[in-house]
Image 1 (tube, rainbow, N blue to C red):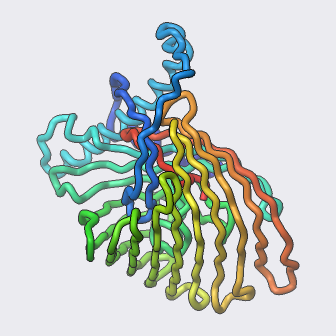
Image 2 (image 1 turned 45 degrees about the vertical axis):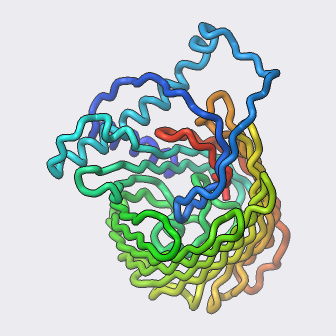
Image 3 (image 1 turned 90 degrees about the vertical axis):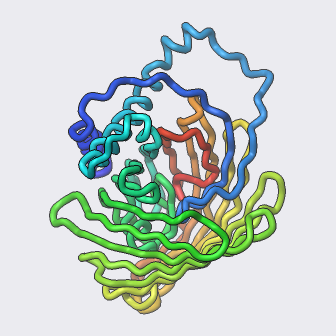
Length: 366
């Protein structure tokens, strides 16, 4: 229920800051497929979709009658995000017109997950990125309901808009803050951020990352990410991560990730490793298969979980509305006297994008 309440709260927050927002005309969307690194927000591959000549569009009048509420919903969310960015930026003296804030973007993702180990888990996640041009083009404000371990400490594997199927239970929180990013380039660059948890007790955090990238996905890319963080509840900590990825054919890309984190509140070093294969297909579809493990060196059970997972993503009804179905087989164990048994899992979710026309091959549910 917290997830659904958080989404309602987010909508109310945007409405209070932005006021009433009018509907905008829907922009035309180019069907594209992109493989995307969630952690670095770096697009690594794109394929232009091939239109299906057998597809027959419904008459415009019938389409408008049946589906116009979908467009109005998506446009209204984008309008609220853009107006919120403008209100925040004008607090710092901006005089830019509304067009300067049309770059606000994000997604909202409800999902229903089940596995034999944890049972049913209804979830809602959202993330809104707000441009602040009067301060700096590299600065963005954001508000979202995310897994704290993924976003603040980066000690958990990135799972996209929907929670991951295996690993430690997600500690989802509604966060708001400021992010500073230097442009991605060959060699070194820096990211930084600060924010706060939007519920009592407040839980502020700050973080900074040094990123080194060399190569390109088509021939082989290596990325090293070193992150220092502090959060009131977690205290100080450090995360080191390495990513290797390569496009192996016209449609397939492989990515291997290994990460380790130590903090004042951790039991030794917490780490995970995963290998993922992503297949971007025409007509805004994608297939993903992955294997991974995670654990903590000084925990009661050092190897917490390992397993496999698969997901299928496809745009439905609109280019910006994505359906995702997934399945998993894992072997979790939390206590020494607990047997390690296989746990099957399934999941179903939708991800509604706004302010962007990209189709992301990376799964929202991992």
